[in-house]
Length: 207
Image (cartoon, rainbow, N blue to C red; front, side, top):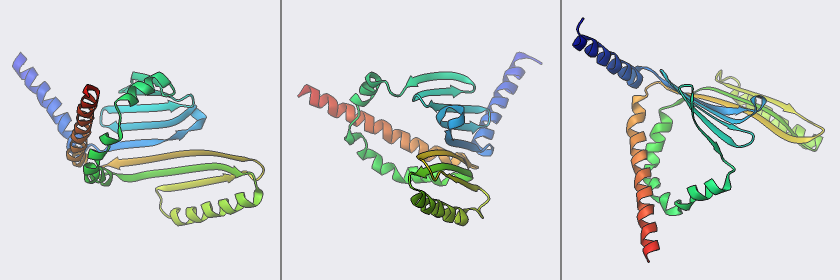
């Protein structure tokens, strides 16, 4: 087999993998909280060979991994960094995004819930009020429990006040190609909003 044949097969394999990702392999997204693991929030995206994971620890440290490799770690409580990030932000940047509402809806409708799990440990400091709240939660559970994809658990504390939720939601887009057009449209409108904000900021500074 000559070098041209090897290159042809390699390119064909890459092209086939890309097509499979776009048309056949669903996109799975999981988000939730996991206090027992020391994480304030977790976020996972799985699309074929691609893996993106993001954790926010209880200390508000954001950690992001791509295919198992850590690509960033950021302190969300760092005031100096937040000031730099917010320096270029303004309310005007959000206005052009109103036009992207339909694109956002297309992205949302492309997904369906695969699993929803909610576990609550709570107390209102008053036994009677806690009992009433527990009744409301059980009523909601009774409505949603027949749906196999939804699971709700509640554990009331009639002596002390507190709120400790554990949440997980798994969603899936079985036709990922439907995400590309609205996602690109949203991205272009975000860039346009940033560009508009910079132009206005430069005009104000010049004045």
